[in-house]
Image (tube, rainbow, N blue to C red; front, side, top):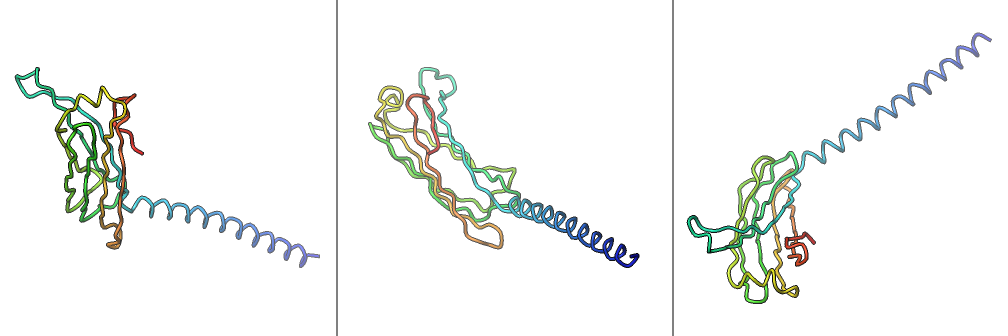
Length: 165
């Protein structure tokens, strides 16, 4: 009888140890997955239209597209290269700008400002206007792995701002 109780207690001990070990292993696996996800560059962007006037000239109004490309990940993105392309209609001039940076760390975003040339008043007058910015960037991430980031922003006539598609 004592042998049976000892064997039963041993079996219960093994089952409890297995259960605790499996739970700790799953928790460690989740922590590892989270740390690996955080340890890669995650490129993102935001865009807005801004109105400005030159100093001492309030009668002259200019509009600029402000683009911010930033890194949400903890690992620095390296060797960024790509294009920022404005497609427009109704008398607004299209444009292309080069995006190039040696690195994109968490704390220093890449900022690009482009002054809109042409008849800007159609942004507020014509709901049929085409005003779109495409961002296409390639960069190196963990273990020099090539990655890419693409985003498209379109002008929303009702809200009067750039919306990511």
